[in-house]
Length: 272
Image 1 (spheres, one colour):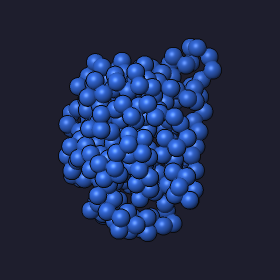
Image 2: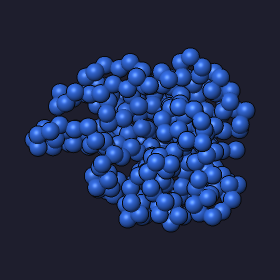
Image 3: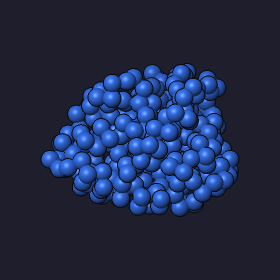
Image 4: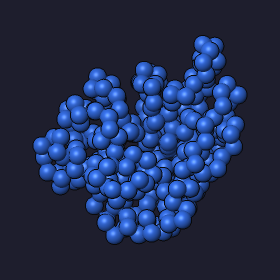
């Protein structure tokens, strides 16, 4: 068994063949946590999990979907339709959704993303404070429900570390691309590092070699970050095996050792 701890099968990219992708996932004994990025995809992830015993769900709002007039939000065709002005985070609605099915095992994808940002200093500060506010609200929700969090961090490690350092949340830093110093800080806070196909294009070899194996989770972030060896453009959960093999190669251990350890880690974090 392998556990893909971060997939997006709820996205529009799978509308034409979602059942076939799920079947391949089952056939290769892959379990996955399907992750929402706003209310629409979170709700869909719950429905997919409810219908498939090898799929669990996470509900949450990604920082790029936070409603703001500080900048124009970018649309992602892979993800599906959403209002250009974004979404106001509604604590009670997400709480109700998280409690609607026992296959919801995490709050996510939540966090901070400063990649696309306003150009003026004043608007940038307002933009960051808004993201922090919504991030903290979702961390509060996770703590209330005793669920782990799936944390998105892009160009915001200092702020994410500062916020998490004052709290007692547990979870994983999804798609980790930081340096070893930052990795150590997250590990010391009790967080796992989520490793996916970005390792085929972004050098975090030092982090992979030095991070204790019991603090690593594997993921795909599908439909994104497809490992080149997969030979296709769109990623899917079965390709998590290529991430496992790359980690094994870098650490000089067997595929089975990494597969076993990351599966144990995932079961422990998500209580599955």
